[in-house]
Length: 227
Length: 257
Image 1: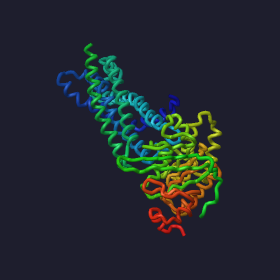
Image 2: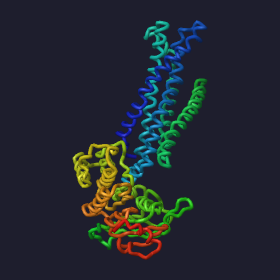
Image 3: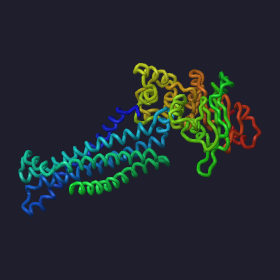
Image 4: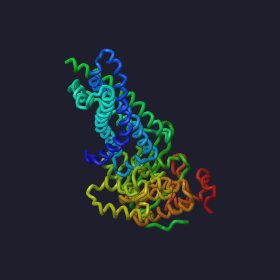
């Protein structure tokens, strides 16, 4: 139903992106770098160092990028949404919207859920890129592999299901983080204590659900791979 | 301190409440309330903290649903109308919250624009600017237009909150504890503003308070809410000079000389 709140959705997408950008950049890079470094000895014992880019690629694209992004966003974005809406609830700002003829649920909740659902997949893609960059730097330093060869090895083992799985996971995680944060904040009670509980509840519940969803989606993907 | 006589149309009821009851779990807050607010009148609902004053105006604005009874606002029963009708009705009602409820993330200008932009789809930028300037001027805070709510004093926040409700030209104003937590000078300014709003915008208002000074200087009538019922309704002097054992203790603090 109109109005579609495009401006508010864009503003929220920007907020979600900006809030997580720095942390995701640092974490994504470190995850890629450390994973590559830690995986090397195992592959080296089989004389399979050349498989390192493929291994890093599969790990980052299938699991690490969506999961790391979702966990960081649960902490940064989920808590922020929970606290913001919780604070608006206890200071009667949500009631003020309602009595001024605005539907606060649509304006506050729908826009935030749409924003996280759109933005988290974008951030997850960025995390994957940054993670691979971290992996490349480690491989380049140790094996002297060129950027072109590394990228060829990176994309070689990936197929349509891997990309789809990663995208679907990010979308589901984004939706979960948004809806949990909004629920905790929008329905918070008991004053300032309630705001703290809303922020905390948003992080804990979203992280728990992200792990549960990860297991379910991985199982479902395994089923599709066998078809 | 006594209020000037206002032009009240006693033949025209803007709010008509009959047999209103509201409970929270086992506690009955309102136990059969009857109330009329007439066109152009300022009605003060006086009572102790927790007596159900704020619940009453939340019921009037449709933020809460009554357990029993009817609440007619501008001819519509708030409890039975559709969501769409309620949304349209709310545009005609201004609600000034106890803690102002300004949107923290928006400047004063954006706070004031918000209800306008949401409810008047075809309004032009120029009309918005004029409306914002007019209501801010009415509350004497034109210089705060680009400030954030956190930068305002308590009294300024109250006045911006009132300005935000005025921007939609409401017919009915609901003030929830307008002078709570303010110093005496700012209280006087807010009381004057409430009277100015009544004169300038021809509103009918319900003012919820436990502040006797506010009640005396803004109310055309006073309704004394105690034990979930209106124990006395009348002019300030009529209510003040009662011998009623239930009502009298409330006035025995001698705030007013």
